[in-house]
Image (cartoon, rainbow, N blue to C red; front, top):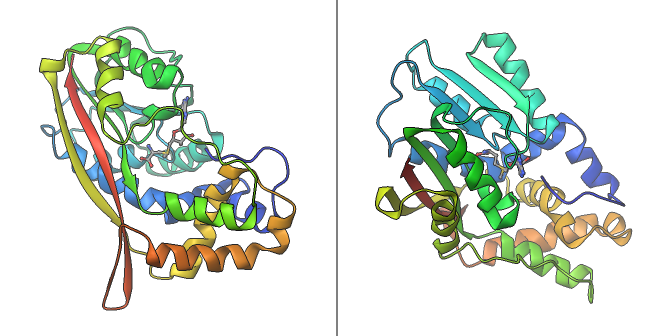
Length: 282
Ligand SMILES: C[S@@+](CC[C@H](N)C(=O)[O-])C[C@H]1O[C@@H](n2cnc3c(N)ncnc32)[C@H](O)[C@@H]1O
């Protein structure tokens, strides 16, 4: 889920190897995606008996865990899918340990193995914009696999406080090296609605809203290190990043504290992220 091809500084490797990557994500972006998922599940009626739910681009099961903790009827089934095995392994371990009614499979969201009209709910939490055809690839599969009358929840970032600081550190430490700009801008919420309509959902049966969540690290230096490990590869790791690791973390911490979207309350750092969410009925 992060750019890692080629050279990887030893410090990043230590934080991204196998299941450690999952912990790194859960301590940073994962805390915020979980707040969005929780908010969005409250926008729909509670999960009825016999529901068949897709936790699409599930990561380590953020949506799955929230649904299960809401004490749903015992005969529901959740299918959790992602293409990153490290995340699926963490979820699978907990599924086994707790005998949860969850099937975990490695699948790409653009090419799901499920039959047509299978799910009562399809929830893609902070994942659709990673899918092919600028999100249409994922949206089409959501539409295809949802039962008529079923509910889809999809969302995307509106604003993320730490994205600009990550780029700022890249610009300082890797002058002249390119930083990939997203080809499509999702931040005004239009692309999210567009892909759903292109997939077959009707605009009149879509509810759109915006909400915010906060990252509130106890240890901002540690958060900066995990954040740099997870996202520093967007701009392609350089061999110099290994020697300049501590400098990068220091620069990132400073940029985070000063960023648009950060507030400091009683000495504690709060970093804002916001989402667009679409709730669509098929
Ligand atoms: C930001 S994370 C969100 C994870 C989880 N839904 C959450 O709320 O924390 C995005 C997830 O999408 C997965 N992903 C990205 N592209 C994918 C694709 N084409 N097919 C399946 N999963 C994909 C990544 O592996 C990652 O786990």
